[in-house]
Image 1 (tube, rainbow, N blue to C red):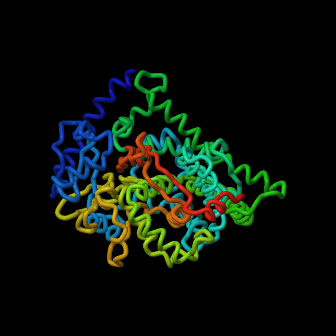
Image 2: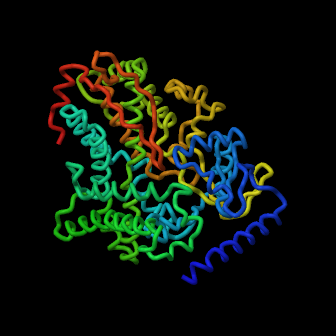
Image 3: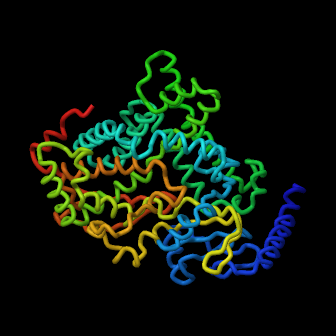
Length: 501
């Protein structure tokens, strides 16, 4: 208890020291909302849809503005031009990660190389292994798995459209688990799907800036879990176990089957065999196990697919134009394949617009500045949390005219910037994006080829108007909606019904 009494005094002295140091700097911080004594902007932090509040503040304070979270500087980057300048042109300064007390200290997510400092051994080794498995030239080897699960998805939703979202989750989970571990998954009750989804829920919740006071008061991590107000520690312990299960369960399954000579071909089987022949077999195996666990997440692709289906139901003219393109290139007696993709420019434009219009990660995963720096006459101190407001960047009217409208044709112009921000920034951009885009193309092309997607009907048989409303959170999904999906022909209906196993 004496420690808890001293904590506020120590915190006050620390904050006063920080403010003295900041006053000694020759340039001001980027502008931002008015700070309160000691707590800064802590009470201003938006709890729901923060990207919209940040966009509003950006209009008032500029493309780059700052917040003070109890002495910690947070910088929000809100335009395409500023994001290019900070995350790409000055990537050596802004490619670090802030230390997350929740994720690293309490949830023990140090297995995730993406959370480690830029240039660290863990980050370098983990990213090397990941890119060797999921680089752009390697993704085609997974196309057969992606196509198989896509066509199984079509068959499942033909019997149970109400279960669409569950089947989408299953399809994307099955794709990655088969590719990584060589394990076939047939239902969402599978333990590996469950491990991945529980872990993803904890990761997303713990990653929301300002949601856990322990992020601003790290001393709180020493409070006993039974102490009043320490529910965050109990939640962290549960999320830690979800992470342990996800990292270990599927990996150990592959090791067991390899020992029995029964393992299927997979990335992990190749990495285990390679590690056994290396000079550091245990270290290489641990690196492989941890790096492949990062591949489990498919939330961006899931959200993007839900947005795509919603957009097709809302915009029949766009849907019909895309279907006409598919019919002219693919025909109506087979489903699209990956070699068709270069010949489907409008469909590719729809996919880009889907990622831009309602991004799955409306706020980028936080970066950190590794040194003191200057941006447009403002001082950004070392250790600042730097976040790209992806929603605002992808709705920048200087880059995307009428940004709130769903207009795929904007990407038929080769000069229009691709929505790369949907996958992150600079040297921290998602290394698995090629697999995710391939999976999104496969599902989107098959749904358009096979189904007419339309709004639901009311009791009078009139179409119900759909709107694009998104949930809050690190990963944002469309608010649950319903739609109609009707096979486009008897031939396609028979093709859908074929066993895709």
